[in-house]
Amino acid sequence: MMYIESMGWLLPSLTLKIAFILIIAGVATRGKTQTAETPLKAAIANPLPTGEPIPDELWSVPLTLWNAANNSTKTITLNDYRGKVIILDFWATWCKSCITNMPRMHRLQDQFPGNIMVLPVTYEPTETVAALFARSKAAGIGQLRGTFQTILLDATLKEAFPNPNGTIPYFAVIGKDGSYKGPVTPEYLTENLIADLTMGNAAGVPRLRAAPVKPLMDWSASLGADWQKPVGYHTMFSHYMHGAGEPTGRRIDSLKGTEWQYYMNQPLLRLFGVALSSPLPRQANRRIMLVDSAVRFDDHSLRNPKYEPFAYNYCYEATYPIGAPKDAVKARMLADLNALTGVKGQLITKSMPSLIIQGNGNAKSHPAPNNEVQWLNMASVAWFLNQRYDIAVPPVLDETGFDGQIWMDDSARKGTIADVRRVLQAQGFDLVEEDRKLEMFLLTDGDSKEEIGQLSLTLTKHGYVREEGSHE
Image (cartoon, rainbow, N blue to C red; front, top):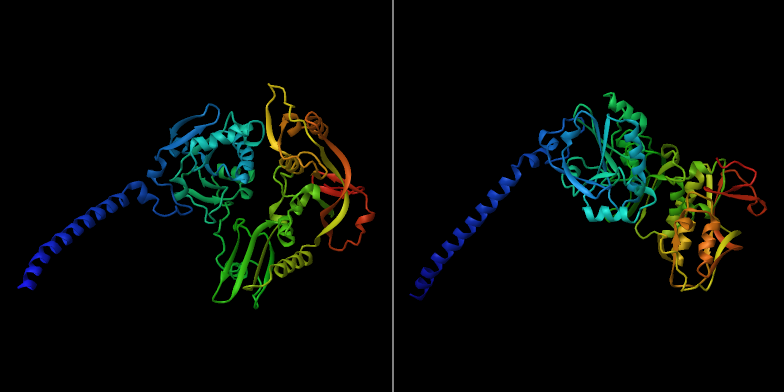
């Protein structure tokens, strides 16, 4: 009797529970179905295939366009620019290469008035983008304030036009005929390509590939590029792989017991920096370039806007047993670079003319009230001077021990070394020329046998070169 009564209580309760669960499941199912059937969602359920027309739903989706000149926004659609070549420039405020590329894109817009429309696109909000312009008033992207516009808070275009590498910057190109021509990285978006696009010819748009998912030897073989059959653990070095972007990465295959690292289409000086575990190959005033041309290796976009990545960027990869000493892996990489590139890179110690920041400072010193200044610690001042790309600056060393902040005005940030010295002296410091023994990066021609200690060197924007030679 006890058992039957218990069952009598249990059955109605269980029935109610099941019914309640089915009701919830039905609501959830209806919700999902309604979301999936939204026309726009259906139109961009997958990335748009190259060569296909842009769906009508995407032409009319509302987009928020921000204007830097007056910090205002308005709603636009892609349809506002139909019939032109539309270039969607995907960027973010934290992406330095995106920001560096912006002036070039504006110049391209000016070169083809009425034929193209460049639309920067970011997922970031108004506050973030406006803050970038607030701190970049006089240089770089700040100079575009009067004409700069960008789409904000984007969650649609990046889904429709993704970069298979997952990196920025990149461009999505929509042709005059309203079809998607494909994603393009900055080095391919040239005046010639845009001229072709404005004429309705998209044959020159390169195919952008996803980042590799297996060693490059196997990957390049599947694409018909130059390759060699891998034998055991290996390294590979090749010239530029078109359409591959510039990804780098490291992966572990625990089943095979191997590690794999790759560097795709990277500047040679960066590869030397990786192999030497040193930033000096990328710092112009800490490298000695005893090669036929220092400028051709300089990949800094502002210091050398005519850098040729297709000629001087390379791919390198290595697979090796898990746990292999990292020093040995990098030594092998350095040996490969020195053997296969026609040049030789190494770190040396040499006495070099330097600019030494000295003094105790004067905390009571202040700039003129109407002078726009930036407050920095001394380490940042030295770093800034060492990174100047517009003038040649000897190595700058901070020997003050000062842990406070000093001000730098526009004349010091953009002027000559004499201007910097004047601002430092106004605050109780000085910039003194003295020799110091420094670690330097030395790049020589592969067959060079010159004694570095006996050479007369000249400092250029691209590094130290032979005094009698040409750095161009």
